[in-house]
Amino acid sequence: MAHWLYKSEPSTWSWDDQVAAGKKGTFWSGVRNHSAKLNLMAMKKGDRGFFYHSNEGKAIVGIVEVTKEYYPDHTDPTGKFGMVDIRAVEPLKRPVTLEEIKVEPKLKDMILVNNSRLSVQPVTDAEWAIICRMGGLKQKD
DNA sequence: GCCAACGTTGGC
DNA sequence: GCCAACGTTGGC
Image 1 (cartoon, protein in one colour):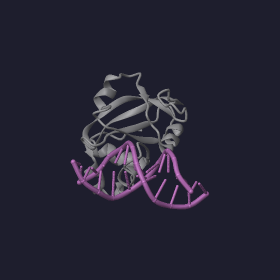
Image 2 (cartoon, helix red, strand yellow):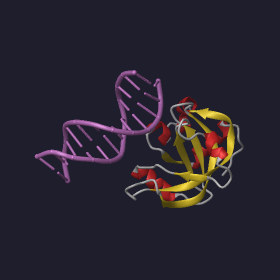
Image 3 (cartoon, chains in turn brown, orange, blue):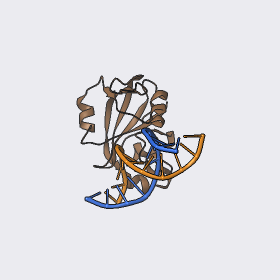
Image 4 (cartoon, chains in turn green, blue, cyan):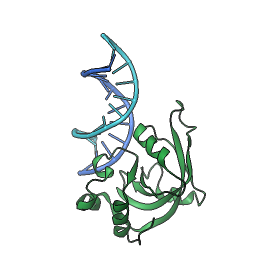
């Protein structure tokens, strides 16, 4: 199963908001970037990803799961972009901060570190396992 | 089709 | 609040 990372500014849409959206989840709209779009299109129902707070907190705070695969984003006037639905699965026992990620040599190739502007990113299995451990979780798939 | 100018994102 | 990095736009 593939893994992903979703970035959001907490002032716009936070982990708490995602949790409040419930088990059914909610759409992840607003992607207006082709690299991010390709990632969204590659997602399968049940794929899990990290939920990252940018700007404020700058940390991975929880795990989410895709509940609906790629479909058109009605908020996009051009009709070029789409979105998926995601739901909150569980919080990390302990947030994993950007600072910690940068310090860990095994995570230095993460897109989060090298291309911080990409809002939806793939995460490798190795990176997934390391961050789950750092976050105080047994490894999940 | 190139590239300069501009807007946005996000770390610091 | 600043500014670097990146993507997009638009003139040529």
